[in-house]
Length: 85
Image 1: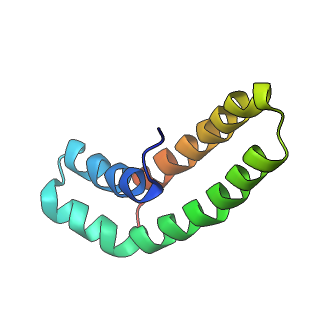
Image 2: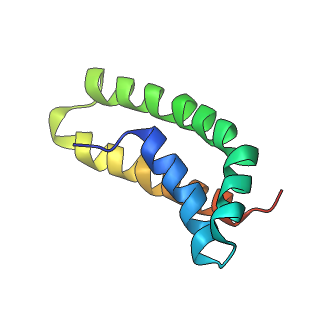
């Protein structure tokens, strides 16, 4: 089962700051500046992707399609974590 986008988006935003040594305050600052933008991006990507995946994609290609999009989504989130204000 896939973890909700809210959980992964916030984890990606906060873990980067903590692991880079900016601490909890840096993570709170990152969330206040980027959380809404990341969540809106998640909704704009994943709702259409999953709609297409479940209603138009052949059954044997669903996992490949979803994981291909997830690869690009993770690259985007990694870039977002490293981006400064």
